[in-house]
Image 1 (cartoon, rainbow, N blue to C red):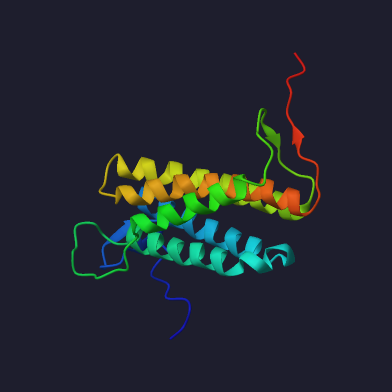
Image 2: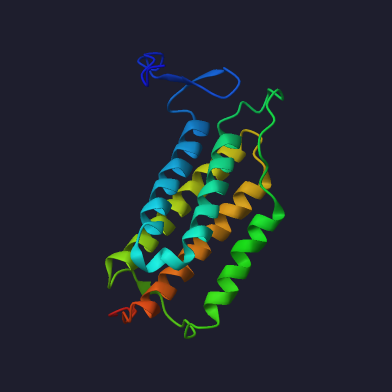
Length: 182
């Protein structure tokens, strides 16, 4: 089978189930942004400092595939049996956040992202995650979306923020806090 099908050359694509929609459809934007987030997570996972948490980051990538499949499926068709996102997936992120926060100083100001490429990768993933969340919320205003997806993506952005802070600590990078000059 060839990678190119030419069926999208006129700006349409198929959802799982065969329904054709414009590539500008909110559903395509939502799962496309989840896909972009998954690629950013792969970049983050590939960093040497994350070797010890590689399995956890891989598990998150797996959940992002589950979310992408759910979003890529025509909600009117019930013919597909897809893997499901579970409440335990959200709990996993919360437990990871809580665990990392025990080592981190209290946060009293906004943090300016940066200081080390790996820390920046975490913040880039966080901002892509927030964009994915906005796309999912926008889609949910007009089409059925599992509410657990929104909850998971929201918690994942929190996880990525705290992971950025944890990485800064591990890499001995000083966090630069933002203070208004006015």
